[in-house]
Image (tube, rainbow, N blue to C red; front, top):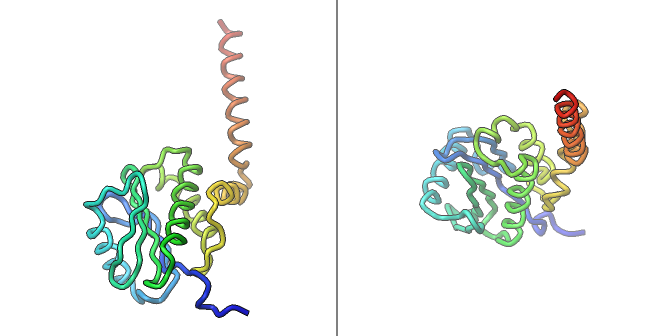
Length: 180
């Protein structure tokens, strides 16, 4: 049986806005015991990374004894933090999975306003990726599919929504052409 330390683990996942304020955050370790410690970490990691250009590829920084992998899109900043002995590629894979799953769920309209309107989906997304610091899934389409099928109040999956939206649009066009 493998030792628990041999399994890669995540310390936290942060989704901050362009001012460093919380949009969605999840901590999986007791390294930051209080809310003020968590907020201080978020502020300092945001300040350290805000001047970089991590829009096309994920960037990696060693910060306060932690490895932080991050990427920006629009006015959102995605961060994944691991211990200083974690594999950067695994952290980057988790970040990319979260980043891409959010893009799928928000239909590539990834900005703060849309993220806040769909915060429930983003939090479900975090739950599908990591449980207690242990990585469960990194494939964006699988994550988005699970979140969509969890669907709040029995909502249809993403593919079903797309088909039903297409049918509704076709119905509208047909009704308009008949009314002319």
